[in-house]
Length: 182
Length: 115
Picture 1 (cartoon, rainbow over the protein chains, first blue to last red):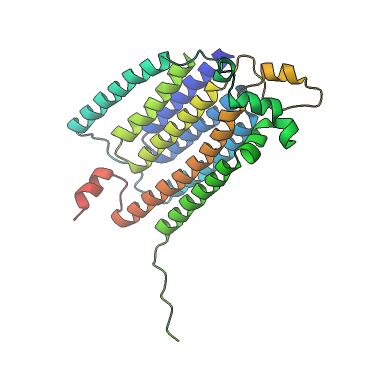
Picture 2 (picture 1 turned 180 degrees about the horizontal axis):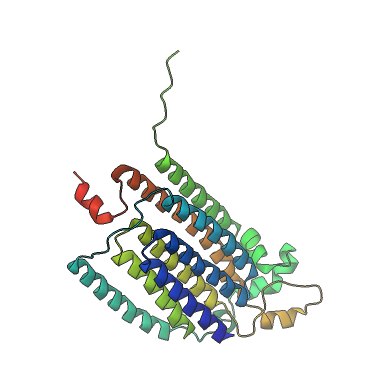
């Protein structure tokens, strides 16, 4: 099972590199959605079917949004002559972050042994044990997002509403017309 | 191994954000980083041979407790995915607006055109 996840991750890394290095923006967008669908399959393998479904829907919407940004503009290729100083700073920064990240990966629990097994008073154990009795939902994820942590879901809806409102405010070409004095 | 590869995927996204000149490519780097972080959180809750946290009629509760994966990261990642979509819509909106104003996706060109 771990081998399958590793293969999926290698596929996603190759697709991500192809998306970033591709010359044509439209093919980059298609390659990027390969990353998203690979992610969806990985979720399905790791016992998270709800998230896999949401990821598919979100990936299709991402594709639509990115194509809307690229398809009408004919100037989709940008000359990639990078400045030397900027490239140097970027590579050094990436290297430093990579070293620190490898140290952090060493401190993680082994793959396939979640923290809720090691900690006796983990909230996840409570949700799994009492979720059906207290909320009546057979799907424990649903009982968490809609009952135990419903305020998080409310906050999510607020953030999403604000982001869409911001996008509409940015994309609207003209300012609002002033009311005529009658 | 799996955590390291997930971190490499995050680094690919970070490389895109740092070194690309095309604005849409930078947004793509952000999307890749978002994917990597979501996958990492789900991996933290994965149990070897685990089943999805959904109860059936014939399921024994003790057996279910021993085998189910962690439901809490799944619930929070569900929130995170949808917020990622909202952020993507906002950034692409900014990109389209900048294209209408300057006629290019190149950030160095836009930097030169100011003032």
